[in-house]
Image 1 (cartoon, helix red, strand yellow):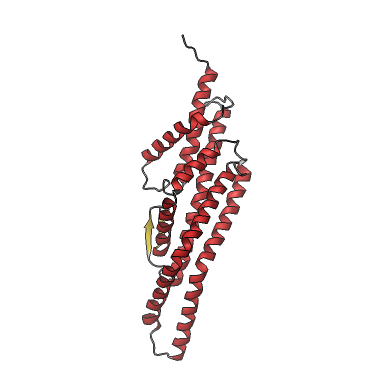
Image 2: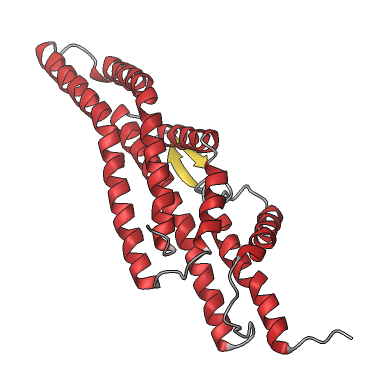
Length: 256
């Protein structure tokens, strides 16, 4: 007759519940899978499948009672770690959309707002376009598979303290936002020169209608600038995605 102790049952339950909590939190906040249009049942099923596959490779737990105070505290920590890892990648997409917002504002397209299903908010046309471009680059680089690999690697060591991880994410967000501004600077400079030239032209010929000729010229320069800059943005996005995965590992205590 096979007998099981409560400690063994708690260890088996915890071996699945705690990885499932981190995986589900990561899927719910990560790019693509964190989309509001992504079905909730698919998120739960995907997280459960990954947790079942990862659980046999995990080291033996400390035997916390899942229903006890220590087990609930560990569950909360695993959830926060998953949210933080997903947020580390989400910041990259947010920065890219912010660069599109700045570019659209300079082009005069700030009034053209669309609903973005990725962020569940109203964004400009250029911001949505760059966000979709970043999503396509992320999927073409197998970013979704690298995200699962990063998650599996994060289970191999004890996670970092939440306070240190929060500071790491804050610093990472600042660096990525700064990089987004640098990405949009060439186009902003071109549009600034265009606006200055239009101002001089209007001053020299006051009879010209600035709104009639200025808006089409500004949009033309902006679209041509986007066309020229897009090939140079793809390697930059690749570097940011790689840095995002590294930041997620550092947040989980896996930096080497």
